[in-house]
Length: 250
Ligand SMILES: Nc1ncnc2c1ncn2[C@@H]1O[C@H](COP(=O)(O)OP(=O)(O)OP(=O)(O)O)[C@@H](O)[C@H]1O
Image 1: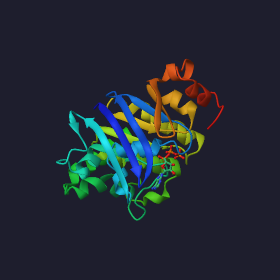
Image 2: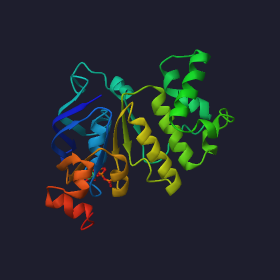
Image 3: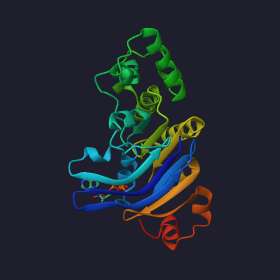
């Protein structure tokens, strides 16, 4: 599903964190958000599934059009937006008291689905999609906290996939993982883009170059440059982008 961002601004109280962003995000592509710490990447990401407004005193102006509809229209329920637009966080956050199985189906159960056959199918399908099935199929009823950090993150991705979102937001999904787990999550992102529109915040420029089709460079709440990832990393148009990707600041 494509996303059209029009004149988007976001505030925390008086602090203007996101400044007049205009951006078209293509369907079934991976878009990376890069920029120095505090430039607003996570804030922007959270405006896309209406998580920003959950912070006290936070507000948003402008439009985000998903599937032809502005998600900020007054008749839109933010809970439905968050179903359609899933999110994976920096630190793996499985529900600590639940089994692997129960973690995957937590969202479906919240939606009232109880049929065991359906739940079994969703668990298998989501874990296969998340490249975790083979590692956990014999221990589905074991506690999720017994998994390694990398496995926990793939479990969180399976949990997100289980509710069949059309868009997946990832906020530095590998920053707490070792290099091998990072690679596995990157491979997973690559395989998921046939089916999902993915937006990933990353501090790791090699990662942006490896996994994304498009890259958006943010600085002090502004979108400085947005282009094909290859162009951003080989031939950026803006001097600030060049300074950042060549490590002159950030
Ligand atoms: N809950 C909050 N209340 C007030 N200000 C906030 C809050 N969260 C973030 N900010 C501020 O908004 C600005 C953007 O923060 P944000 O977390 O979006 O940046 P970021 O680019 O994702 O940074 P990082 O790469 O360090 O995670 C920063 O100046 C930050 O201090």
